[in-house]
Image 1 (tube, rainbow, N blue to C red):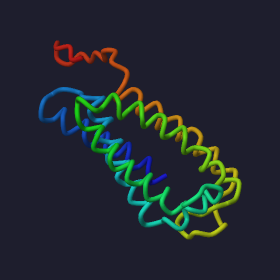
Image 2 (cartoon, rainbow, N blue to C red):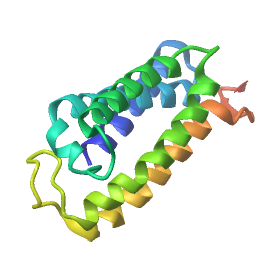
Image 3 (cartoon, rainbow, N blue to C red):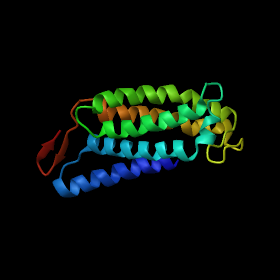
Amino acid sequence: METLIVLFGVFTLTLLTIWLTTKRLEFRFSGRVAMALMLVFTAVGHFVFTKGMTMMIPFLPLPNVIVIFTGVIELIAAIGLLFRNTKVLTGKLLILFFILLFPANIYAAIHHINLQTADYTGKGISYLWIRIPMQLLFITWAYFSTINQSKIKIVNQGNVHP
């Protein structure tokens, strides 16, 4: 849930700051900034809660290395979202990343894994009622803030902004 607070909070603050300074509503840029900071937030979790995260993938070799590596990938993706020439590729790779990581979230829910305490006191299957829509939101967010190039038109005091 903290992840959503970061995503929506940063999106709102970025959108508002840009609008107050330029009178433009930059939805896609604000979305990329928000997702970038969300990825930094989640990457930190890979380094702080490594033990709990390795419990999500006990069936893979070198789970510690995989957890740290995916945290590094999230940091690189956060940077890639912020540059015009890398945002589309980063968005496509993030969508793939979110899809590939989802089975680990399902495994964690089925086995009641608590990432922060590295034990089996997690919320269980009921967590998927939150996690599935959240994962779909991340995929959709990545798509609309990086790949989808259709124009968003906002009318503001007679001016149309793409």
